[in-house]
Amino acid sequence: MGASTTENGTAKGMMAITPHDTNTINKQYNHALYVEVAGNVKVTFLDDSTYTFLAVGAGQTINAEVKIVWSTGTTATGIYGVKEYR
View: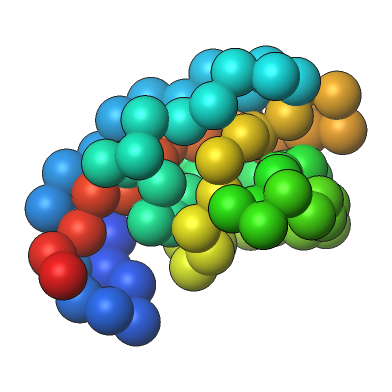
């Protein structure tokens, strides 16, 4: 797993995320997503809107606070939730 930084600082920790269509992410680890293996990532944001990030590259960080990473529509693997300094 590579190191990750976000526009708000350096990652304090990371937790593996298993995509699921209804399970929510631990709030401590929802500040950004780190993707190890390229693909699409479908998410639900904190405001309940959904979006699919297309063709996310390996090693890319998605700087978005999300509460769900969907199994349906997500093809990327090795997804980690980022805990960052505030």
